Image 1 (cartoon, rainbow, N blue to C red):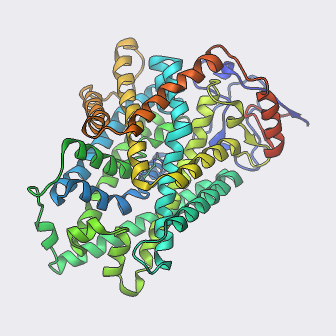
Image 2: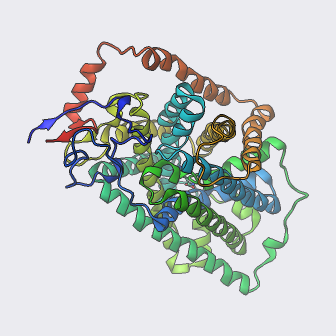
Image 3: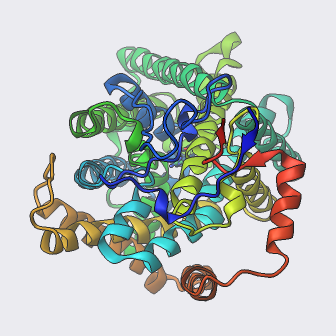
Length: 506
Ligand code: ARG
């Protein structure tokens, strides 16, 4: 049969509200695209293949990435006290858990993929949902990639440089190479990307286990003195400092909402989504607590605050001839996390472009490999630019500020829908106090750094978010399109060999 191209428009949604034209996660090479066996206008559903175990793995595998290996130093530096740092680490875990529980209500109530995007659409309509997809495609997802790949690079070059701090240009170069590698994996095949994700998740848990065992060994030997000086008094923390310390800590926990991006693929989501959250996030919190204790069992507070790469310092102190294990483990962990991040970014592109909210080309898939290549390439290009012009710390602040505006927004969506859709089925209903708590904390996180230390960056970020309206009104609302856009789309389609997802082979 020949190739029949059908453009997808908003009309693709099926009656039960689940959009039925996308198969991103299930586009395995060799699979036929959906619709091939079914009658042309049969509602087609995504395959539900994520069970409880993979659900937990998806959460844990994304959350544990670079943060626990780079953030502890930054957090100590920002608070100046072991005690306060530890409290912040635990508070970040709690906040992530509360946020995720609220997301569990949202995700079981509206089961379409895309997380915030879908909830904003439901609660507030098109423009806020558009602004989210605009910011996440252009800023959030690429900055996540950039931060993780910079951390990857930092650890990857560590064993090969003799000076204390590896040259900046080298780190950036390696970061760019890692982005290209991850892009290649994700463009090559969806199966390869999922396998990379699984193997690397297992590897990072082994790395955590090594650190925790090493720390326990030192503690048993009686090396507890650094843990006995909580230094509450010497703390340098101001309110704004604490908020940015939270940014550093929350970065390590980011990804707690990752399962919500793929709800359409979860088996029995009303049970498995909340359950994966309740198992996954406390598990990560426990790991982080133990790792922090282990670090301090091996090095002093000032050594930890000064260390460029804590996990490497840890390895050098404790593992002797096996010290190379640590940088290796961290590169594996970060590579896996970056892989998962790019993977999810592909899905977000789909969710937004099936509503006509993104350039069509970003939702197309490769004709033979069925991977969402254009969206992935686009994300990676922006991530490369961020790697070249940013630093890990500045990117983390910038990212967290923007991300928590939207996490707070999702809480507002939940609260609003309790009033506007009181009777909608809610298989999991979160105690209403929880979204209020998260909303208050997220407002604090967004507002205090601005008041404490006004920086142009925060203004730029806000202007950028609202600037999205300048794109939304003409191009989405009025449906205006640039005259040369069709030509560019066709050109890119030929170069990249990509087609719309609603393509059927008949
Ligand atoms: N928490 C991860 C880390 O420590 C970063 C996760 C990035 N966020 C995401 N949604 N993929 O590196």
